[in-house]
Each structure stands twice: as C-alpha cells, then as structure tokens.
Amino acid sequence: MSELLSTRDAAQLLGVSEASVRRWSDADLLPVQRLGRRGTRRFAEKDLRRFARGQGDPASETPRARPQLDVHDHLATFYSSESGRMRLSLPFLRAGLAEGDRCYLVGSDSMVGRYMKALDAGTGDLVTRSSVGSSARAAVAGWEELWLDALSTGFSGIRVVGEMATYEGFSEVEEMLDYEIGYDSLSKRFPVRTLCQYDVRQFDGKAILGALQVHPDLFPRRIADYLF
Image (tube, rainbow, N blue to C red; front, side, top):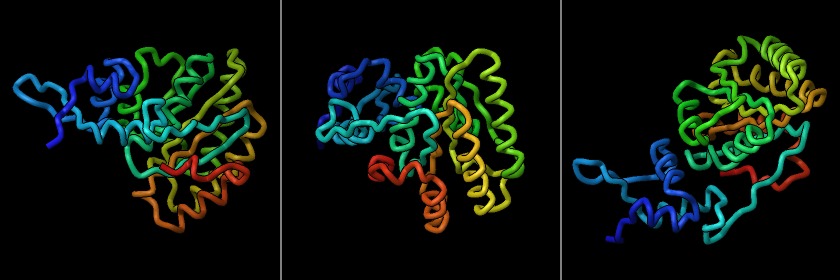
C-alpha cells in the first residue's frame, strides 16, 4: 500500500498552503482519510495528483491553463466530480471578489456551503440564491432587477455562477433552456460574466446537447476547456 501523506506533505506537493488543503478536504473537494481518535488527516498521492490535474494547479503533472472570461461572456461548464465543479467556478468567484465585482452564486444550501468552505475567509460581496424564479420569464426579469440595483449602488462588474441542477422551479428542461436564451440576451446589455454549471450526472444527453446549443459563446472556444 502506498504511504499516506500528511497535510504538510500534501500542501508541498500541491504548492499551496496547509490551510488550503484543510479547507478543500473539509469541503469534500479533496479525498482525505481520517486516522485515530483525533481524526488526523492523511492523503493518498494519487488523489492529490488527480486533484491537481482537475484544479489546473502548477503542481500537476499535466497542468491545464484556466480559460479567461470577458465581460458579456455566458459560458457553460460540464462536470462529473466535486473537483470538476470547482475547476473554473472557484477561481472565477475569487477573482471577482478580489476585484470588487458584485458576485452571485445560485445553488442549494448544501452546495453553497461547499463553496463557502472552499472560498477564502472573506466572501465580501458574494450574494447567494437558492432559486431564480418559478418561470423563465420571471427568472430573467429578476436578474435584470438585481443587476440594475448592483450598478446603481456603484458596482462596475458583475459575476454569476449558476448550478443548473438546482434550478428546480422550472417545470421541465425546455423551460430551463428557454431561460438560458433569455438570460443570454439580457447579459449582453450588462457588464456581466456568467458560468452556468451542468452536473452531467443529473442531466440526460438531450439536456446536455440543449445546454451546448444555448451557449453560443462556447463555439469559438476549445470545448475541452469546459469539460471536467
């Protein structure tokens, strides 16, 4: 059996702080084993390297650069693991908070909790929402109101991360896709950057194909950069 690594060793391998390793393991992003009565953290090297590849960390054997999002970009990501979920969305939110953008996160309470644990201590202007509305039209109108309010209070940039599996207010996938079309049109009128997150474990192939079709900003890009 391969030797398990301590938190310090894991941090050195990943090239990050021990606090980051503890935060990621507590958020269930990084596989960890707990040993003894005190629950001492121990990590398998293969899990660390797999995590590094998923995160695009410089310590990875095969690092992947994170694509940049410009104002008005409305992109979708497709993931099948917790580390994949955070691959773009976490640095995207961190950058927005650091730059003073108004940042929105749409997700279930448990999902928001994972993000909060993974983010640095100060969440600044992060606004969380558990839903966006009961219909596509109401959801788009709600975003317009929120963005107008953000701009009127002095924010010059806006970022949105939406975990699409939590948009339970929509009666069917078709309505969710109609919402995406309306959202895309609206977002071009505001200084907004958007990541729509699709957990492929919770959508069928037809829904994923539809999601690709309603995110035209993906077409000029390498689709592999958004598959995790």
